[in-house]
Image (cartoon, rainbow, N blue to C red; front, side, top):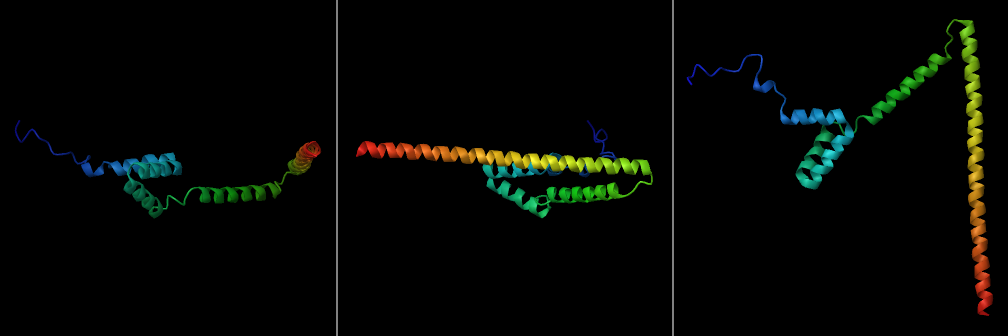
Length: 152
């Protein structure tokens, strides 16, 4: 083997272009979400506490700890508000607007009747639990009275 047999790396592929271990691990954890980051941090603390501490600092520094849920909730609220405004806007077609108004009215009535049903269900459950409590209390007092009369 001579020195002419060894070829330098081609210009299209350099060692620096390859993602390193940390970059690949970061991408892998990002694909799996915040739970994977937290699991990696906990495992780091369990097996080697400086690794867990380093992951915690990295998550805080890179803002991975506090991103995700808050922003997705905010965007969901914005989308909901947009949909509500779009539903309230007239379409220009009188027949469709009448159908939409009738459907929305019917859905509101169904929601109200369902909420009333749930309220009655909660009241019935509360009454049943209270009656059970009172019956149990009455049994305990009857048992206590019977023991007191036996002792005298």
